[in-house]
Image 1 (cartoon, one colour):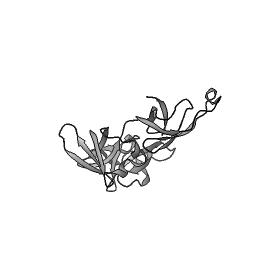
Image 2: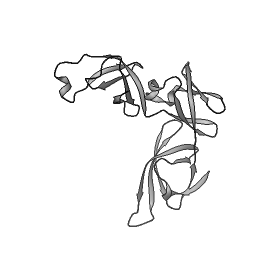
Image 3: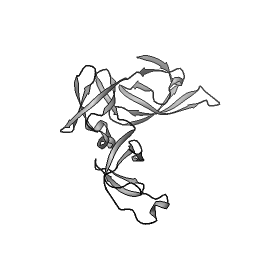
Image 4: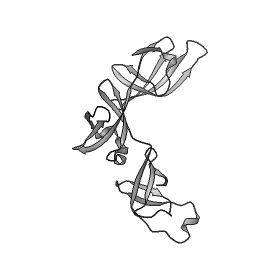
Length: 187
């Protein structure tokens, strides 16, 4: 780990602070008229999700942590645990399904996900931003509805509800943005 000055902190940096690992979410550099410059940093704990606002003076030293990213293939889920395999060493690891949060339904068998590690501890799982899903149920198109920019509700094969354009029908494959939970394009 490397020590950096408080004024070098940028959004996305992972810091070791107060015995925990924190990701800098927002950073505001302030130079008051009187006194020294400082960085007002909003941080999120990577292990339990707590938030913290901290002020770092430019002369303060903080531990900057580099996380290792590994692409691993999703194999299956068993009792709330996700099993991934390293495609190079073929080692399997089990992670808590809660690491994915709301995006869990988008995880598909054989999908490659990026797992961030701190040493041997897995901290987060990132799935691709766009995933192909199939429309399981949707309403039929009404006459004249295709002319406007209206959307209709749909249920995907993974159980999620999203809004889709009226020209997309049931059993069609579509591309869904996993960060915004919305229709992107036809597959």
